[in-house]
Each structure stands twice: as C-alpha cells, then as structure tokens.
Amino acid sequence: MKNIIISLSIITMIITGSSTQKEKADLVIINGKVLTIDKDNPTAEAIAVKGEYIIAVGTMSKISAMIEKGSTKVIDAEGKLVIPGFNDAHVHFGPLNPDYIELRYTTDASVITEKVKAQVARSRPGELISGGHWEHEMFIDKQWPTKELLDKVSPNNPVMLNRADGHSVLVNYFVLKASGITKNTPDPFGGVIQKDPVTGEPTGIIKENAVDLIKTGEVKPERTVEEENARLWQGYLLAMKEARELGVTSIQVPGSADFEAYEKLQKDGELTSRIDIGKSLSGDTVLLKKYLILEKQYPKEGNWIRFGYLKAFMDGTLGSGTALMFEPFTDNPSTSGLALMPYEEMEKMIITADKLGFQIGVHAIGDKGNNWALNAFEKALQVNGKRDSRHRIEHAQTLRNSDIPRFAKLGVIASMQPTHCISDKKFCEKRIGTERAKGAYAWKSLADAGAMLAFGTDYQVEPLNPMEGLYASVTRKDRLGEEGEGWHSEQKIKMEEAIKYYTLGSAYAQFMENRKGMIKTGYLADIVIVDKNLFIIPENEIMKTKVDYTITGGKIVYSSGK
Image (cartoon, helix red, strand yellow):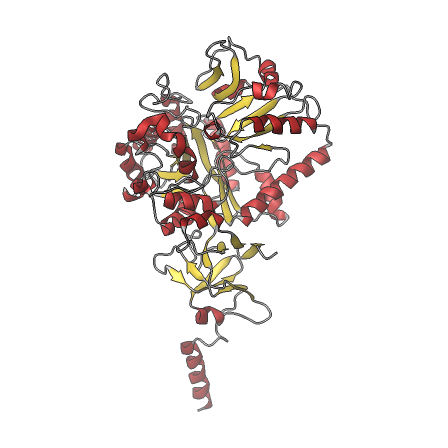
C-alpha cells in the first residue's frame, strides 16, 4: 500500500508539472511581448535559458516554475518587446580607428577641409590622413569634391577620404604625385580616374579598380609594436561594444578579416557577436584548396567563428555612377557603368568554386550586373549539378522584372541592406530614371516571388544600427521623415517581415536556420529586448528605439542600465 501511494505521488507530480521535476534555468526573461519568428509559436510571454541555449518558451506560469531562487538570473521585461538577436548579413566589421575622420551626413563640403586641417595638426608630416563616408549628393551643390578642398591644408600629408559606398575615394595632390597619376594616366579596366573636363587634370576622385594605382607615400607613425598592437586591440573592443549596444549578436563579413584576432577576443571573453569570415572569390584552385583547409578549421557546424562565403565584385555602385546597367545612366548617357571583370572570367571562377562546394556571394548593383550574376550562378548549376549552395547576391539593388523570379528558381539569396534605399533614393531616379527605379530595392517583389531575403547594413557604408534598416523597410522614407506613403511604397514590407529577414533570413543565408534566428526551444539564446514596441509606435519613433538588453549565447553582454 505504501509503494502504491508513493507511485501515485510520482505520477501526480509528472501530470501537474511539479517544479521539483522541472529543469531549472540559468536565465529567465519574464513579462515580455516575445516575437519568436517561429511560425508554430509566434508569440510568448517568457523565455528560459540554460547555458547557451533556450530551453523553454511560453507563458509566465510555465517559465516561472523554472526559476531557482538564488541561482537563476531573472530579467523582468516590463512588457517590452523581446525579439531574436539581430544578424547582420553584410557588414564590413573590424577594429575602429580613433583617428578616422567621420564625414557621414556632411552637407557643406568646406567641413571636409576643416576636419582634415585639424587632423593634420595632430599628425606628423607624411602620416596618412584617412576618413570617409562623405556623400556628394548630400552636399548643397551636389558636386563631386576635388583635391582643392585638401591641398592647402595638407601639403605634406597624404589624404584618402572614401565615399560612403567605398567605391570612390578623394585624394590630395600629395597622393596623386606619389602614385604617378597625371592627366596622361589612362583608366585601368574597371576603373576611372576622374579628370577635369577643361584641363584634363585629375580631380582627386579615383573610382573602382583605379584605386589599385594609388601609392600614398605615407610615413608610418612613430609607435612601438606594443603601442600599435594595443591601439589595434582597442579598435576591436570599440567595434564589439558598438555591435552589442545595438543588439547585433551575429555578423557576416563579406571578404577577409583576421580569424586569429577574433579567436583572441573569444579567449578573453570579449567576443560578444558571432562572426562569419569569408575570403575573396578566386579561380585559382591551389588557393581555393587552402580555403577548404580554413573552412575545416572554422566549420559551418560551429557557432561562433566560422568560415563564410567567397566574395566577388561584378560592378560598382549607383552613387559613384559605376553600377553596371543595360542602358546608359539617365544623368550621364556617356556611360552604362563598369564591369569590374569580364563576364567570362567571373563565370569561370564561380563554376570552379561552386564545384568545390563553396558558398559564393557576388556584389551586384546594376540591372545588368545582377543579370550577369544570376547567369553565372545558373551556369554553375547546369555544369556542376544542383545542391544546397545558397549562393548570394549582395545588394541586388536594381533588377529587371524578368530577373526577380530567377532568385527563387536558382535558390539565390537576396542579401540586401534596407538603408541603401533611403540613402540612395534622393539620386536614384536622377541616375536611372523613373521606370528603372521601379525595380530598385524590390524587397516585396522578391519575397512575393519566393526568394529568400537576408538583411544587413553594409556597415561602415551605412550605420550599424538595425533600427534604421527596419525604418527603411517599412517606410521607404527619408531619415528626417516626409509626407506620403514612401518612395515606391508598393515595395514596403511589414515590421514582422523586416525583423524576420534581419534574424531568421540572415541565419538561413549562413546555413544556421536550424539553431539561430528564432526564439525557440533548442535554439541559441541570442535575444534582444528593446525599449519601444516597434509594432505600435509612430514610424518616426522607430529609429529612436534603443536596446535595453543584448543576450548572446545566454549571457547578458549589454544592459542599458549599466
């Protein structure tokens, strides 16, 4: 009889879910408006985490039973929105330079002169003065800047200031002279040395592949190796700090970065964002086999530091007037943009790398650039056969209607950066006309056609803040706000979709949708709590939304209260 009573007691505990039988959590978030991005369980009130993983998602009563007094960390979300951590699918991430001249949102070109003059005063003769993010379309006169802005204040220092898109650079006469660039220097393939239409002299603007001609003639700063290393390390820490404060728990770097530096960050407990690092696409099989070794060292099965995709450039940008278009630019009929390599060369490289099993991402902005990228991916599929390659087009900014369904058909991911739309819309129609602009930043058309989308920022071309991307996705309006429904409003998407592309979509793009990008049991505990409900606030409040908590792998890596 005693044994029967004991057995009945155990059965009762199992049925009622007694807390003595429940797994205890290391971290619990309660009282939240949880958007899970999990279609089978779209919303919840609370989350339980153990170690790096989510162990339960559900109601307050269910999750509260998993709290162990004295050992479980409890975050009261106070009714705030809880979402998966942001995953930036295209970010030029790396150590920040404290001496970099920031020119983003500059409207008066004379500011460039003032800032260069100030930095020269802090530097030794011969030291490189670097900076950028200027956008000439934001200048009052909308004219390209010239070396004359720099020469009087920097006669003894090389100056290089990148345009916001990173595809053009303004240099001073010091750099032109050190590089041997004169009025007689021809444009290289896929590059432009901008020249004065009257004198023929270089203006100081160097575009695309012509940047390879630059020799700065710089004098290195007088720092010891230890000082340089400390400065570099501080730059990495500043970059990580910026990412976690903005809720960015994963970053995908298009191109090369220092694997060892991120390993050191991880060892020191400073790696607060997961990272994928790729390499440049090559047709050299010897080099590609070295990449295969690197891929085994940082495999897709890993969760923190992983080998990413191989990146190639098909063309330039709209802003620099170097995107590859089928027809000439509306505002400059003398050019249809630039192919940064012959199509046949690109196709051959893609086929070779695809055969070895690599994921490939191609930068393509213009309608012809995107068409060529899709053609090359289609050719690789025909030659090598179908597999789960998840090749990507980075930016996919301007598309012909006939190419939009091909993304889904070929399984090519549209890796897009929504802020490009609201940055570029002020000159997009001037560059390519109203009709072609209908295929620009066509998120909704791509999604409706069944394409997989992954969102990011293209930082440092654009700010790292995901809130700006969400705002761009749902409004397609200027950052200062404007009346009406937004630019080509038929391409706007809903907030939940925008968040999904910034989380699960980006996770899919890196083969991690089975363990990241959703708030779901068994998934990595990458979670963000924001201070405003993005679903109900006025659109002009979206970019003002701040992160209260960033949690990566179950650890609170940022709290606004600290």
